[in-house]
Length: 491
Image (cartoon, rainbow, N blue to C red; front, top):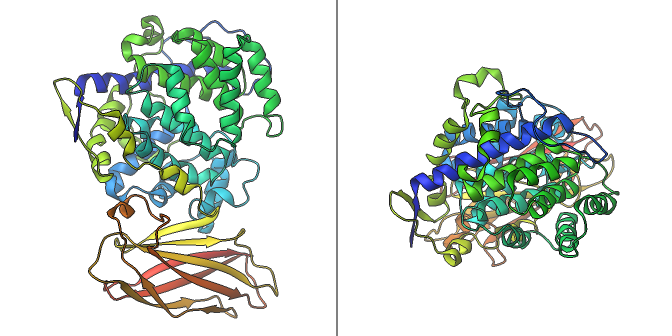
Protein backbone atom coordinates (compact mmCIF):
# COMPACT_ATOMS: atom_id res chain seq x y z
CA UNK A 1 0.00 0.00 0.00
CA UNK A 2 0.92 3.67 -0.24
CA UNK A 3 0.95 5.12 3.27
CA UNK A 4 -0.45 8.63 3.51
CA UNK A 5 0.28 11.06 6.32
CA UNK A 6 -1.65 14.23 6.97
CA UNK A 7 1.12 16.75 6.47
CA UNK A 8 0.10 19.30 9.09
CA UNK A 9 -0.52 16.68 11.78
CA UNK A 10 2.83 14.99 11.16
CA UNK A 11 4.66 18.31 11.05
CA UNK A 12 3.10 19.29 14.38
CA UNK A 13 4.22 16.06 16.02
CA UNK A 14 7.79 16.42 14.75
CA UNK A 15 7.92 20.04 15.87
CA UNK A 16 6.59 19.02 19.30
CA UNK A 17 9.28 16.34 19.44
CA UNK A 18 12.04 18.95 19.15
CA UNK A 19 10.32 21.44 21.44
CA UNK A 20 9.77 18.70 24.04
CA UNK A 21 13.41 17.65 23.67
CA UNK A 22 14.54 21.24 24.20
CA UNK A 23 12.30 21.66 27.25
CA UNK A 24 13.47 18.45 28.90
CA UNK A 25 17.11 19.24 28.24
CA UNK A 26 16.73 22.74 29.68
CA UNK A 27 14.81 21.66 32.78
CA UNK A 28 17.18 18.76 33.42
CA UNK A 29 20.47 20.34 32.39
CA UNK A 30 21.37 22.07 35.68
CA UNK A 31 21.06 18.75 37.56
CA UNK A 32 23.13 16.56 35.26
CA UNK A 33 25.40 14.23 37.20
CA UNK A 34 23.56 14.44 40.51
CA UNK A 35 23.60 11.20 42.48
CA UNK A 36 20.87 12.00 44.99
CA UNK A 37 17.12 12.39 44.56
CA UNK A 38 16.16 15.92 43.57
CA UNK A 39 13.07 17.97 44.36
CA UNK A 40 12.61 20.33 41.42
CA UNK A 41 9.35 21.98 40.43
CA UNK A 42 10.18 23.30 36.97
CA UNK A 43 12.65 25.58 35.18
CA UNK A 44 15.61 26.94 37.12
CA UNK A 45 17.19 28.77 34.16
CA UNK A 46 16.43 32.26 32.77
CA UNK A 47 13.37 32.69 30.58
CA UNK A 48 14.00 32.72 26.85
CA UNK A 49 17.31 30.87 27.10
CA UNK A 50 17.17 27.18 26.15
CA UNK A 51 20.29 25.34 27.21
CA UNK A 52 22.65 23.94 24.58
CA UNK A 53 22.39 20.18 24.30
CA UNK A 54 24.61 17.67 22.53
CA UNK A 55 21.55 15.38 22.29
CA UNK A 56 20.14 17.75 19.68
CA UNK A 57 23.45 18.74 18.12
CA UNK A 58 24.37 15.23 17.06
CA UNK A 59 21.00 14.80 15.39
CA UNK A 60 21.64 17.99 13.45
CA UNK A 61 24.94 16.40 12.38
CA UNK A 62 22.97 13.41 11.05
CA UNK A 63 20.72 15.81 9.13
CA UNK A 64 23.83 17.31 7.53
CA UNK A 65 24.96 13.76 6.73
CA UNK A 66 21.74 13.27 4.79
CA UNK A 67 22.41 16.55 3.00
CA UNK A 68 25.82 15.21 2.00
CA UNK A 69 25.19 11.51 1.34
CA UNK A 70 21.48 11.32 0.54
CA UNK A 71 19.10 8.66 1.80
CA UNK A 72 20.56 5.87 -0.32
CA UNK A 73 24.12 6.62 0.75
CA UNK A 74 23.34 6.84 4.46
CA UNK A 75 25.07 4.07 6.42
CA UNK A 76 27.24 3.59 9.49
CA UNK A 77 30.42 4.53 7.65
CA UNK A 78 28.90 7.81 6.45
CA UNK A 79 27.87 8.59 10.03
CA UNK A 80 31.42 7.77 11.11
CA UNK A 81 32.70 10.24 8.52
CA UNK A 82 30.38 12.85 10.02
CA UNK A 83 31.91 12.26 13.45
CA UNK A 84 35.20 13.39 11.96
CA UNK A 85 33.72 16.38 10.08
CA UNK A 86 31.03 17.83 12.31
CA UNK A 87 31.37 16.72 15.95
CA UNK A 88 33.89 18.36 18.29
CA UNK A 89 33.49 16.78 21.79
CA UNK A 90 36.00 14.14 22.88
CA UNK A 91 34.44 13.15 26.22
CA UNK A 92 33.53 9.58 27.18
CA UNK A 93 32.39 7.36 24.27
CA UNK A 94 32.57 10.35 21.90
CA UNK A 95 36.29 10.52 22.59
CA UNK A 96 36.78 6.78 22.16
CA UNK A 97 34.96 6.90 18.82
CA UNK A 98 37.09 9.81 17.62
CA UNK A 99 40.30 8.01 18.61
CA UNK A 100 39.29 4.73 16.99
CA UNK A 101 38.03 6.34 13.79
CA UNK A 102 41.27 8.29 13.45
CA UNK A 103 43.12 4.96 13.64
CA UNK A 104 40.99 3.64 10.78
CA UNK A 105 38.62 1.41 12.77
CA UNK A 106 35.10 1.42 11.32
CA UNK A 107 31.78 0.75 13.09
CA UNK A 108 30.84 -1.28 15.03
CA UNK A 109 34.52 -2.03 15.69
CA UNK A 110 35.02 1.69 16.37
CA UNK A 111 32.58 1.43 19.25
CA UNK A 112 33.95 -1.84 20.61
CA UNK A 113 37.72 -1.46 20.72
CA UNK A 114 39.13 -0.06 23.97
CA UNK A 115 35.66 1.04 25.07
CA UNK A 116 34.80 -1.17 28.02
CA UNK A 117 33.95 1.80 30.24
CA UNK A 118 31.63 3.64 27.85
CA UNK A 119 30.14 1.16 25.36
CA UNK A 120 27.14 0.76 27.71
CA UNK A 121 26.71 4.49 28.28
CA UNK A 122 24.22 7.13 27.16
CA UNK A 123 25.64 8.71 24.02
CA UNK A 124 23.45 6.94 21.44
CA UNK A 125 19.96 6.48 22.87
CA UNK A 126 19.69 10.21 23.60
CA UNK A 127 19.96 11.09 19.89
CA UNK A 128 17.44 8.71 18.28
CA UNK A 129 14.50 11.06 17.68
CA UNK A 130 15.66 11.97 14.18
CA UNK A 131 15.41 8.33 13.08
CA UNK A 132 11.88 8.09 14.46
CA UNK A 133 10.88 11.33 12.75
CA UNK A 134 12.27 10.02 9.46
CA UNK A 135 10.34 6.74 9.91
CA UNK A 136 7.16 7.67 11.83
CA UNK A 137 5.20 4.52 12.57
CA UNK A 138 7.84 2.28 10.94
CA UNK A 139 9.85 1.18 13.99
CA UNK A 140 12.06 -1.35 12.21
CA UNK A 141 13.24 1.33 9.80
CA UNK A 142 13.93 3.75 12.66
CA UNK A 143 15.78 0.97 14.48
CA UNK A 144 17.94 0.24 11.42
CA UNK A 145 19.33 3.77 11.44
CA UNK A 146 19.57 3.94 15.22
CA UNK A 147 21.80 0.84 15.09
CA UNK A 148 24.00 2.38 12.40
CA UNK A 149 24.27 5.48 14.56
CA UNK A 150 24.92 3.72 17.87
CA UNK A 151 27.45 1.31 16.42
CA UNK A 152 29.94 4.13 15.82
CA UNK A 153 30.56 4.82 19.51
CA UNK A 154 28.92 1.86 21.31
CA UNK A 155 29.53 -1.19 19.14
CA UNK A 156 27.02 -3.88 20.08
CA UNK A 157 26.40 -3.32 23.77
CA UNK A 158 23.80 -1.94 26.15
CA UNK A 159 24.30 1.51 24.66
CA UNK A 160 23.08 0.17 21.33
CA UNK A 161 20.24 -1.86 22.87
CA UNK A 162 19.09 1.34 24.57
CA UNK A 163 19.18 3.22 21.25
CA UNK A 164 17.08 0.51 19.60
CA UNK A 165 14.54 0.68 22.41
CA UNK A 166 14.15 4.48 22.33
CA UNK A 167 14.09 4.68 18.53
CA UNK A 168 11.33 2.06 18.42
CA UNK A 169 9.44 3.78 21.22
CA UNK A 170 9.60 7.18 19.50
CA UNK A 171 8.61 5.79 16.10
CA UNK A 172 5.65 3.92 17.58
CA UNK A 173 4.59 7.08 19.44
CA UNK A 174 3.59 8.63 16.09
CA UNK A 175 0.79 6.07 15.69
CA UNK A 176 0.00 4.98 19.26
CA UNK A 177 -1.21 7.16 22.14
CA UNK A 178 -1.06 4.69 25.03
CA UNK A 179 2.30 5.12 26.77
CA UNK A 180 2.27 1.66 28.34
CA UNK A 181 1.61 0.01 24.98
CA UNK A 182 4.37 2.07 23.34
CA UNK A 183 6.92 0.97 25.95
CA UNK A 184 5.93 -2.70 25.90
CA UNK A 185 6.01 -2.85 22.11
CA UNK A 186 9.44 -1.17 22.02
CA UNK A 187 10.75 -3.79 24.46
CA UNK A 188 10.16 -6.48 21.82
CA UNK A 189 12.98 -4.99 19.72
CA UNK A 190 15.77 -5.71 22.23
CA UNK A 191 16.98 -8.94 23.88
CA UNK A 192 14.96 -9.95 26.95
CA UNK A 193 18.14 -10.71 28.86
CA UNK A 194 19.70 -7.29 28.24
CA UNK A 195 20.12 -5.06 31.26
CA UNK A 196 18.19 -2.32 29.46
CA UNK A 197 15.17 -4.59 29.09
CA UNK A 198 15.38 -5.78 32.69
CA UNK A 199 15.60 -2.19 33.95
CA UNK A 200 12.56 -1.09 31.96
CA UNK A 201 10.54 -4.12 33.09
CA UNK A 202 11.42 -3.33 36.70
CA UNK A 203 9.76 0.08 36.32
CA UNK A 204 6.61 -1.42 34.83
CA UNK A 205 6.41 -4.08 37.54
CA UNK A 206 6.89 -1.59 40.38
CA UNK A 207 4.32 0.76 38.91
CA UNK A 208 1.81 -2.09 38.81
CA UNK A 209 2.59 -2.78 42.47
CA UNK A 210 1.88 0.91 43.21
CA UNK A 211 5.42 1.38 44.54
CA UNK A 212 6.12 5.11 45.05
CA UNK A 213 8.25 6.49 42.26
CA UNK A 214 11.15 7.48 44.52
CA UNK A 215 11.39 3.89 45.77
CA UNK A 216 11.33 2.57 42.22
CA UNK A 217 14.14 4.98 41.42
CA UNK A 218 16.23 3.43 44.21
CA UNK A 219 15.52 -0.07 42.88
CA UNK A 220 16.78 1.02 39.44
CA UNK A 221 20.01 2.29 41.00
CA UNK A 222 20.46 -0.96 42.89
CA UNK A 223 19.82 -3.11 39.81
CA UNK A 224 22.45 -1.19 37.85
CA UNK A 225 25.05 -0.83 40.58
CA UNK A 226 27.45 -3.03 38.61
CA UNK A 227 27.55 -0.51 35.75
CA UNK A 228 27.53 2.64 37.84
CA UNK A 229 26.58 6.19 36.88
CA UNK A 230 26.04 7.60 33.37
CA UNK A 231 25.16 4.21 31.89
CA UNK A 232 22.31 3.47 29.52
CA UNK A 233 20.16 0.84 31.29
CA UNK A 234 19.59 2.88 34.45
CA UNK A 235 19.03 6.17 32.65
CA UNK A 236 16.63 4.69 30.11
CA UNK A 237 14.72 3.29 33.10
CA UNK A 238 14.59 6.77 34.67
CA UNK A 239 13.03 8.09 31.44
CA UNK A 240 10.51 5.24 31.42
CA UNK A 241 9.76 5.95 35.08
CA UNK A 242 8.84 9.54 34.18
CA UNK A 243 6.64 8.39 31.31
CA UNK A 244 4.78 5.76 33.35
CA UNK A 245 4.48 7.51 36.68
CA UNK A 246 3.73 10.84 34.99
CA UNK A 247 0.58 9.25 33.54
CA UNK A 248 0.44 11.56 30.54
CA UNK A 249 1.03 14.78 32.45
CA UNK A 250 3.88 16.55 30.64
CA UNK A 251 5.21 18.58 33.56
CA UNK A 252 4.86 15.77 36.09
CA UNK A 253 6.66 13.35 33.76
CA UNK A 254 9.60 15.72 33.25
CA UNK A 255 9.85 16.57 36.95
CA UNK A 256 9.77 12.94 38.11
CA UNK A 257 12.48 12.08 35.60
CA UNK A 258 14.79 14.92 36.61
CA UNK A 259 14.25 14.11 40.28
CA UNK A 260 15.80 10.69 39.67
CA UNK A 261 19.15 12.38 39.02
CA UNK A 262 22.06 11.08 36.88
CA UNK A 263 22.04 12.15 33.19
CA UNK A 264 19.06 14.43 33.72
CA UNK A 265 19.21 16.55 30.57
CA UNK A 266 19.18 13.37 28.48
CA UNK A 267 16.49 11.48 30.38
CA UNK A 268 14.15 14.47 30.59
CA UNK A 269 14.86 15.36 26.96
CA UNK A 270 13.74 11.92 25.83
CA UNK A 271 10.59 12.11 27.96
CA UNK A 272 9.76 15.51 26.49
CA UNK A 273 10.32 14.24 22.96
CA UNK A 274 8.13 11.14 23.39
CA UNK A 275 5.27 13.11 24.90
CA UNK A 276 5.68 15.76 22.23
CA UNK A 277 5.28 13.11 19.52
CA UNK A 278 2.24 11.59 21.22
CA UNK A 279 0.36 14.80 21.95
CA UNK A 280 1.72 17.29 19.44
CA UNK A 281 2.25 20.91 20.40
CA UNK A 282 -1.18 21.04 22.07
CA UNK A 283 0.05 18.39 24.52
CA UNK A 284 2.90 20.57 25.77
CA UNK A 285 1.88 23.19 28.37
CA UNK A 286 1.86 26.59 26.71
CA UNK A 287 3.72 28.32 29.54
CA UNK A 288 6.61 25.85 29.29
CA UNK A 289 6.72 26.29 25.50
CA UNK A 290 6.82 30.07 25.81
CA UNK A 291 9.51 29.93 28.48
CA UNK A 292 12.23 28.74 26.09
CA UNK A 293 10.75 29.52 22.68
CA UNK A 294 11.76 27.97 19.36
CA UNK A 295 15.54 28.47 19.32
CA UNK A 296 18.17 25.74 19.21
CA UNK A 297 21.45 26.63 20.91
CA UNK A 298 24.24 24.38 19.65
CA UNK A 299 27.34 23.48 21.63
CA UNK A 300 29.34 20.73 19.94
CA UNK A 301 29.21 21.15 16.17
CA UNK A 302 32.16 22.33 14.13
CA UNK A 303 31.70 26.12 13.72
CA UNK A 304 32.95 25.80 10.16
CA UNK A 305 29.48 24.50 9.27
CA UNK A 306 27.37 27.09 11.12
CA UNK A 307 25.62 28.19 7.92
CA UNK A 308 24.21 24.67 7.50
CA UNK A 309 22.88 24.29 11.05
CA UNK A 310 19.14 24.87 11.68
CA UNK A 311 18.67 27.65 14.22
CA UNK A 312 15.13 26.79 15.35
CA UNK A 313 12.98 23.75 16.05
CA UNK A 314 10.70 24.87 13.21
CA UNK A 315 13.55 24.94 10.68
CA UNK A 316 14.80 21.57 11.92
CA UNK A 317 11.30 20.14 11.47
CA UNK A 318 10.98 21.37 7.89
CA UNK A 319 14.35 19.95 6.90
CA UNK A 320 13.65 16.56 8.49
CA UNK A 321 10.28 16.33 6.77
CA UNK A 322 11.90 16.90 3.40
CA UNK A 323 13.75 13.57 3.78
CA UNK A 324 11.03 11.33 5.27
CA UNK A 325 9.50 10.03 1.99
CA UNK A 326 12.97 9.42 0.53
CA UNK A 327 14.19 7.49 3.59
CA UNK A 328 11.11 5.26 3.49
CA UNK A 329 11.36 4.76 -0.28
CA UNK A 330 14.96 3.53 0.09
CA UNK A 331 13.61 0.97 2.57
CA UNK A 332 10.89 -0.24 0.18
CA UNK A 333 8.08 1.71 1.84
CA UNK A 334 5.87 4.01 -0.23
CA UNK A 335 4.69 7.04 1.71
CA UNK A 336 3.54 10.54 0.88
CA UNK A 337 2.12 13.64 2.53
CA UNK A 338 -1.50 14.61 2.03
CA UNK A 339 -3.97 17.28 3.10
CA UNK A 340 -6.57 14.62 3.86
CA UNK A 341 -6.73 11.94 6.56
CA UNK A 342 -3.79 9.70 7.37
CA UNK A 343 -3.98 6.21 5.82
CA UNK A 344 -1.87 3.79 7.85
CA UNK A 345 -1.89 0.03 8.36
CA UNK A 346 0.02 -0.99 11.50
CA UNK A 347 0.59 -4.63 10.54
CA UNK A 348 2.05 -3.77 7.16
CA UNK A 349 4.07 -0.87 8.56
CA UNK A 350 5.61 -3.02 11.30
CA UNK A 351 6.53 -5.68 8.72
CA UNK A 352 8.90 -3.31 6.92
CA UNK A 353 12.44 -4.55 7.70
CA UNK A 354 10.99 -6.89 10.33
CA UNK A 355 13.72 -8.60 12.33
CA UNK A 356 16.52 -6.21 11.36
CA UNK A 357 17.71 -5.67 14.94
CA UNK A 358 17.60 -9.37 15.76
CA UNK A 359 19.79 -10.16 12.75
CA UNK A 360 22.21 -7.37 13.51
CA UNK A 361 22.77 -8.51 17.08
CA UNK A 362 23.97 -11.88 15.74
CA UNK A 363 26.98 -10.37 14.00
CA UNK A 364 30.46 -10.35 15.47
CA UNK A 365 31.27 -7.50 17.82
CA UNK A 366 34.71 -6.94 16.27
CA UNK A 367 33.57 -6.37 12.70
CA UNK A 368 32.95 -3.70 10.09
CA UNK A 369 31.40 -3.34 6.64
CA UNK A 370 32.67 -1.95 3.35
CA UNK A 371 30.29 -1.33 0.44
CA UNK A 372 32.01 -0.43 -2.82
CA UNK A 373 31.23 -0.74 -5.60
CA UNK A 374 27.51 -0.45 -4.96
CA UNK A 375 26.67 -4.00 -5.98
CA UNK A 376 28.83 -5.85 -3.46
CA UNK A 377 29.38 -5.49 0.27
CA UNK A 378 31.97 -7.10 2.50
CA UNK A 379 31.88 -7.68 6.23
CA UNK A 380 35.19 -8.18 8.01
CA UNK A 381 34.86 -10.14 11.27
CA UNK A 382 37.48 -10.82 13.93
CA UNK A 383 36.85 -13.22 16.78
CA UNK A 384 38.53 -10.79 19.17
CA UNK A 385 40.05 -7.32 19.12
CA UNK A 386 42.31 -6.85 16.06
CA UNK A 387 45.55 -6.69 18.03
CA UNK A 388 48.81 -8.26 16.79
CA UNK A 389 51.08 -10.10 19.21
CA UNK A 390 54.65 -11.04 18.21
CA UNK A 391 54.92 -14.68 17.17
CA UNK A 392 51.13 -15.26 17.10
CA UNK A 393 48.90 -15.71 14.08
CA UNK A 394 45.83 -13.50 13.73
CA UNK A 395 42.76 -14.49 11.71
CA UNK A 396 39.69 -12.79 10.29
CA UNK A 397 36.93 -13.66 7.86
CA UNK A 398 35.54 -11.56 5.02
CA UNK A 399 31.91 -12.25 4.15
CA UNK A 400 31.02 -11.04 0.67
CA UNK A 401 27.51 -10.47 -0.57
CA UNK A 402 25.75 -9.25 -3.67
CA UNK A 403 23.27 -6.47 -3.05
CA UNK A 404 21.27 -6.89 -6.25
CA UNK A 405 20.20 -9.89 -8.31
CA UNK A 406 22.58 -10.65 -11.16
CA UNK A 407 22.13 -13.13 -13.98
CA UNK A 408 25.20 -15.01 -12.77
CA UNK A 409 27.47 -15.12 -9.71
CA UNK A 410 30.29 -12.60 -9.34
CA UNK A 411 33.85 -13.88 -9.50
CA UNK A 412 36.76 -12.07 -7.92
CA UNK A 413 40.55 -12.40 -7.71
CA UNK A 414 42.02 -11.56 -4.30
CA UNK A 415 45.40 -10.03 -3.52
CA UNK A 416 46.33 -8.62 -0.11
CA UNK A 417 48.87 -5.83 0.29
CA UNK A 418 50.65 -6.42 3.63
CA UNK A 419 52.93 -4.41 5.94
CA UNK A 420 56.61 -5.03 5.33
CA UNK A 421 57.77 -8.35 6.79
CA UNK A 422 54.21 -9.73 7.23
CA UNK A 423 52.75 -12.73 5.41
CA UNK A 424 49.25 -14.14 5.02
CA UNK A 425 47.44 -17.34 4.07
CA UNK A 426 44.22 -16.95 2.06
CA UNK A 427 42.38 -18.23 -0.99
CA UNK A 428 43.13 -16.21 -4.13
CA UNK A 429 39.64 -16.34 -5.62
CA UNK A 430 36.17 -15.58 -4.30
CA UNK A 431 32.78 -16.67 -5.67
CA UNK A 432 29.88 -14.39 -4.66
CA UNK A 433 26.55 -16.08 -5.21
CA UNK A 434 23.52 -14.00 -6.13
CA UNK A 435 20.96 -13.31 -3.37
CA UNK A 436 17.74 -15.29 -3.38
CA UNK A 437 15.71 -12.36 -2.11
CA UNK A 438 15.84 -8.67 -2.98
CA UNK A 439 15.39 -7.95 0.77
CA UNK A 440 19.14 -8.43 0.92
CA UNK A 441 19.37 -4.82 -0.22
CA UNK A 442 18.22 -3.56 3.15
CA UNK A 443 18.75 -6.59 5.39
CA UNK A 444 22.20 -8.00 4.63
CA UNK A 445 23.49 -11.29 5.96
CA UNK A 446 20.31 -13.28 6.40
CA UNK A 447 20.48 -16.93 7.41
CA UNK A 448 20.00 -18.16 3.84
CA UNK A 449 23.16 -18.87 1.85
CA UNK A 450 23.96 -15.69 -0.08
CA UNK A 451 27.48 -14.99 1.09
CA UNK A 452 30.93 -16.20 0.19
CA UNK A 453 33.43 -16.34 3.02
CA UNK A 454 37.15 -15.69 2.67
CA UNK A 455 39.31 -16.75 5.62
CA UNK A 456 42.56 -14.85 6.13
CA UNK A 457 45.36 -15.80 8.53
CA UNK A 458 48.03 -13.18 9.20
CA UNK A 459 51.57 -13.89 10.34
CA UNK A 460 53.03 -10.65 11.74
CA UNK A 461 56.63 -9.79 10.99
CA UNK A 462 59.35 -9.11 13.54
CA UNK A 463 58.41 -5.43 13.62
CA UNK A 464 54.84 -4.61 14.67
CA UNK A 465 54.02 -0.92 14.35
CA UNK A 466 51.43 0.84 16.56
CA UNK A 467 49.11 0.81 13.53
CA UNK A 468 49.51 -1.81 10.80
CA UNK A 469 47.43 -1.31 7.65
CA UNK A 470 46.75 -3.91 5.01
CA UNK A 471 44.55 -3.75 1.95
CA UNK A 472 42.44 -6.57 0.53
CA UNK A 473 42.19 -5.92 -3.22
CA UNK A 474 39.40 -7.78 -5.02
CA UNK A 475 39.21 -7.56 -8.81
CA UNK A 476 35.55 -8.24 -9.69
CA UNK A 477 34.43 -9.44 -13.10
CA UNK A 478 31.41 -7.07 -12.92
CA UNK A 479 33.27 -3.83 -12.24
CA UNK A 480 36.08 -1.87 -13.89
CA UNK A 481 37.16 -0.68 -10.45
CA UNK A 482 38.86 -2.84 -7.81
CA UNK A 483 37.02 -3.42 -4.54
CA UNK A 484 39.51 -2.38 -1.86
CA UNK A 485 38.92 -3.31 1.78
CA UNK A 486 41.20 -1.55 4.29
CA UNK A 487 41.99 -3.48 7.47
CA UNK A 488 43.76 -2.02 10.49
CA UNK A 489 45.69 -4.20 12.94
CA UNK A 490 46.76 -2.58 16.19
CA UNK A 491 50.24 -3.18 17.55
